[in-house]
Structures are given as structure tokens and as C-alpha cells.
Image 1 (cartoon, rainbow, N blue to C red):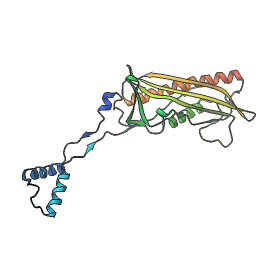
Image 2 (cartoon, one colour):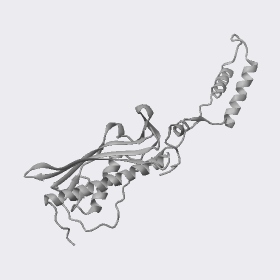
Image 3 (cartoon, helix red, strand yellow):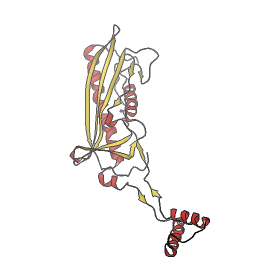
Image 4 (tube, rainbow, N blue to C red):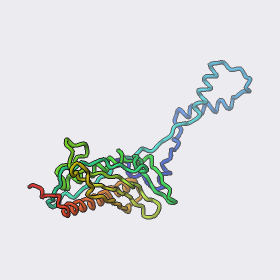
Length: 256
């Protein structure tokens, strides 16, 4: 992660527009030729040699300064760190975790902002370093492994089909700058299935939404807000999994 001080607001986004750079020595040279030609220009019928014409065309081409300075892109991730100390927990069987696909408006890498007047905007210069659905899927897999609820958690196809399957999607992932204070908005839905006699039986289906106020209006603060929201969502989801397991009697105590 680098250059985290770039702003997320409309004010700071305008400041990221390309700017002309000061004229270089080469441009000054061409500028002098342009001025010389302008002062000595002759009527269109004045005869010019072919070589002089080529020289003047090249000099005039240098009169246009096309050099621009573009801001660097900033790349961010989403992380959810589960507390290291956790009470001994019962476990289900093995789990296969499907990819948590983000909804179309939020599936790309650029940050998405909600502005006033229900206007949405993408930020080309502040973005995720990978598809947000993949980042959230990996963070969820790490969290569930650390929870001890499942024997194994496979984020990729397992050697054998596990009896438990978790799928879901990211319904919202944006920075809300339509009012003060700005907020990091994240919404995820989970569906937990269990294989029963060759068919998948849904055990838990629930959506979770968190809106985290930002400490400031920078991209780094927005990424941190999304990470905090993801941690809160996974904490709530883990609690629901434990409740479902306890009520259905499908979990057993983890071996020491």
C-alpha cells in the first residue's frame, strides 16, 4: 500500500486531474524556433527548399507540449483480523467456500463513491489490488479457519465434496460521501448448505450490513473502514453459525 494520503472527496479527486508540466529544455528550444519562424514567416508563395520545409515542420511539431504529469495509482486491500484468543469451539465437518461475487457496480477494482443526488462515481487512481470479491472471499476463509468451527475450510475445490457448502455475495461496497461524516458501506449475504441424502439443504441464509464512519476523507481511511466493517460482519456471522450448530445438534466438540 502506498501514497495513502490522496483524498477521496470530490475536492481531492479534482486535484488528481492531469496537469501540464513546466516546459523542458527541449520545449524551450522548439519554442525559440517557433518564435523565429513566426517573425520571419513569408507569404505562402515564397519558395522553400524541401529540406528547409522538413526542418520547419519538425520544429513546429515541437511547439505543442504534450507532456503531462499523472498522479500515481494507490492500491489497497480489505482485511479482517479475528482475535487471536478464542475459547475452545465445537466444529462442523469440512466446508467448501464458494467465491463471494460482488454485485456489478462494485465488482471492479476502482473505489466507488456515493455522492449527493444519488450520484455514483468510480475513482480511477484509488483501487483494490485485486478484485474485491476475491479479497473478501480470502479474508472470510482465513476467519473461518481461525474460528475452529469447521474441520477444514476449502476456498478452492476440495479433494472430496465436503458435507458443508457456503456461498454468498457482496451486495454493497462503496464510500458514502453524500453526507457528513463519510462512511464505509459493506453488505454481504451468506447461504450455508448441508448435504443431506444427496441434496443440499439450506441451514442458514442471512444478510449483514455495516456502515462505519470514517476518521477522515482519505482513501486509506476508507479502506480501513471497509476492513472494520468486514470484521464486524464476520463476527456476527460466526455467532450465528454457533447458534445454528447448537440448536440443530450438528456440531461436536473439537478434539484436543
